[in-house]
Image (tube, rainbow, N blue to C red):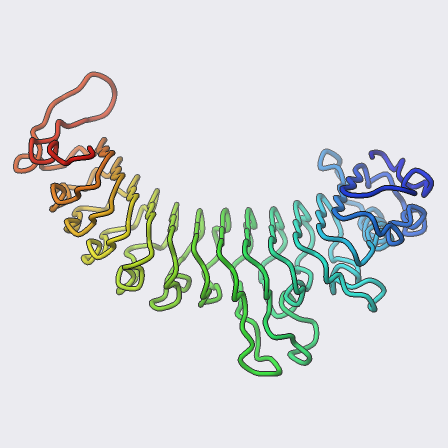
Length: 381
């Protein structure tokens, strides 16, 4: 529904399932929004509320109006999914900030929440105590500089349930250009309450100032960090023992991977991708300990000069290396990677292939190399 036509409750009397309401910039006040009686519609399971991104709405009056309109669209407690897109207010209304309806009935049935393009909101709503929330996406929240205690609980540590974000499995934080700090939850009552105990997928993209993050995600399996400043806290030794996929792209301050990283991933990591880390000077010497590693990609790392011994990577299926002009040696132990099916090395102009590879210029762009017989005899290549 577009352009405010939803305001007649009659047209929404029997609505069930997914409801998308667009053109909310045309609604002018809380009372107008309340005519839709969204809170009385127990059959709505997923609600998408959208303001147009094509209009300039910078006036203070417009911002106040949008806050009132969103306040008037508080949903029924049965709601399972919520998307708020293009909201232009400085803060969320009370029902969303605390994820309650009239401060009485909690939105405890929410499974998925997406906050998209709410560019003036400087704080996130409190989501940490939603008991069945599984998916959370935060995208284009340009005014958010810090994710702090309010993200976890509004109770100042009192009355916290057994865990914070107890069911969350997927979390994405995308395109928040001013986000610099994502803090650990503060001390709770009872103490030692877990946070993110079920989180398996974490993706942080387009947060170039981010340096401070929580540590310790006991169930994390897939971690992707792209265009952020630092990854050191997230990659601390002993914090990610179940990780199966690690993708690092344009991590500005990454000069090396933390010591002991390979040791903690020996029996779990299957994918390691490093791209565009311009300060990366070396890879871990114990890279060959990653016995479960199936895919290893290294691209656009101009300061990388050597590749460690990889003879222990018996599960390796794909090895791709490209645009690493500082690289002078090919990986030792390549002929011991008996599961290798794909080998791709290109645009590494200083690579010394005299001992391992016979150089051969191939038509087309870049530099490609013919692999020696010892490698060609690998059974799956």
